[in-house]
Image 1 (tube, rainbow, N blue to C red):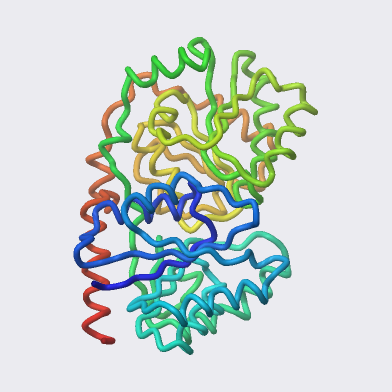
Image 2 (image 1 turned 180 degrees about the vertical axis):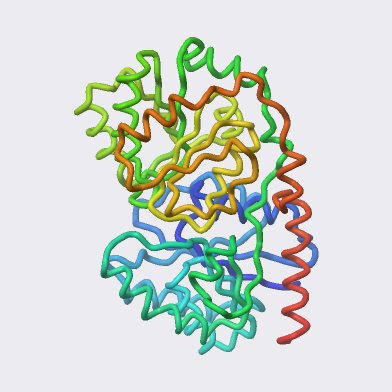
Length: 369
């Protein structure tokens, strides 16, 4: 049995952990066994993806979060590597892979994969400096380089060769369903509303405060607009306060984490996620698979996601009123069709991409073991 260790920031319902949960579902479990190291707080609750991974037989190892216990965090990581044997370490922590893979090299783990899931940094000078320092170390201590997009690979690895693993998903689940749309809109009491939706963690990266500002402008243009927010996160209180400051409480629906995102995409009229940075942004492609008009920032989201004419980019330099006008002036797609075969042609069919991942692991095992 080949033991593979994945290092993540969480196993709740974020993009990377959801992606890996999908991949493992289609992995040969008689040949590969996946393990996960996850930083947690003292009040950790088992998340949606963690539950699914455990049900499939994965081991989940906990270590303390990096802040404020960085020493304990590293000691916990070292303890796991000293007590268990792993053939491959697959690190999904972008620049911080420099730290984890350096330790993995010390513990003589032969195959060390750095997997980049971002293509830009837009969170301050300090992070830019840290990124500049750590990226050369990542290239030195890793011996295999993965990325979710061309932009992400070039951002992290520069001219080094890297393997693009598409953020694939079960395409058939995401094709538009008029039945799902009708039933969920009735359940949410939005049958007669224009529904703007967003799926993403409530954190700095996903930029929900800007989205609320945009929605406030949309309400001025469209009196029957409602906003559907799917997700949870550390900024939820701040987001709710912003909504309250605009007196929009009766126009915004919070769903929390859901396990049927595809149904909510069917219920939406527009999808808007103004992320500050993304490696790819799988949720944009899920939205496109539902044949839904989809909006992203021009400067910070890779244009590789423009797989159908429904993908629209708006510059970060434009103000909220411009965003609102552009969104509302885009015609609602009243004749949504099944576009999943077209998206599958770009490499986003989960079973085929899972086979590609296993083949890549096999090739690394032949090369390094």
